[in-house]
Image (tube, rainbow, N blue to C red; front, side, top):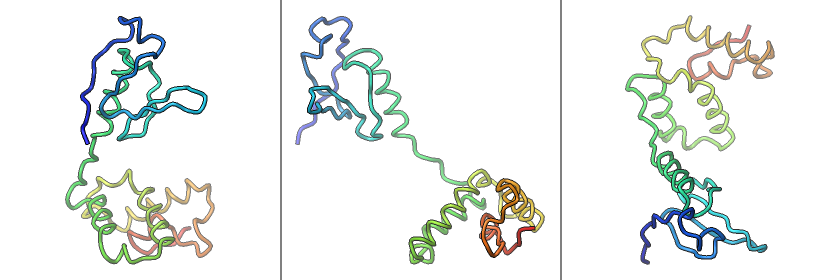
Length: 163
């Protein structure tokens, strides 16, 4: 399979490209025509639709933005932080052998705790857990997260009861 190199043709300077009569491929862009003849283009890696006309400066600007966001790798969590602990737990055999529903519930807790990922484990005290529990309870407008009144966001940090 051969790959074609990207072409830097500007449609505004070339009248033959203004009506999309001439086609050319751009590396990393998936192009197809629907049943009505309308042409659509998507960035392969991110799946984002590129709406600018093919070959225009705006097209290549959109493509550059897609390439930048597609290659961004999330930073590794700081060692000894809550984020590192959750990342390590999600990769453990104990987590991977859980039922899918249980894993989804735990993931919802991890997503809720995402703003706290940079907090160090040595700073997590019973008072810290209580503050997280109270914030979660208040965020839910005083409604208990579960029928047993156990606070979901705090269940991974330690046992606590919603007030």
